[in-house]
Length: 132
Ligand SMILES: [Zn+2]
Picture (cartoon, rainbow, N blue to C red):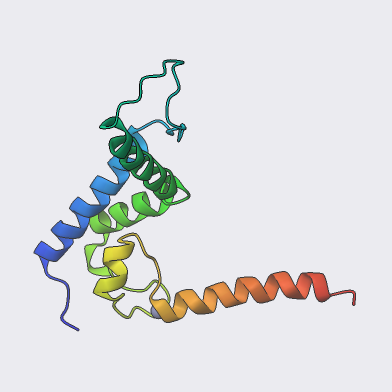
């Protein structure tokens, strides 16, 4: 894999900043059911738009979950230690472009992430298995 170019970092920075802005700027949006204001008139045009807004709102709410700290950490890394951005914090191998485009704040490559997840799962299991 090619080393990351300065303009690649620029691109990830912009992605991260956009993500952060989406995460920070908007108050948590309630996903409201289609408004019922008591009138019997239905607006045929309003319905698809309303559904689209609900999809967008739920996607924003999902993005908000737990990722702001990771986004800020990734932006800090791009600022302080740009050579390390895009490298796995564990094995220092490049995190794949595909993975970064899904989560530009990723800290670990796929295999290290998987190992971490397994360790967490194993730790939970061993806690409950301890007395059996
Ligand atoms: Zn790794």
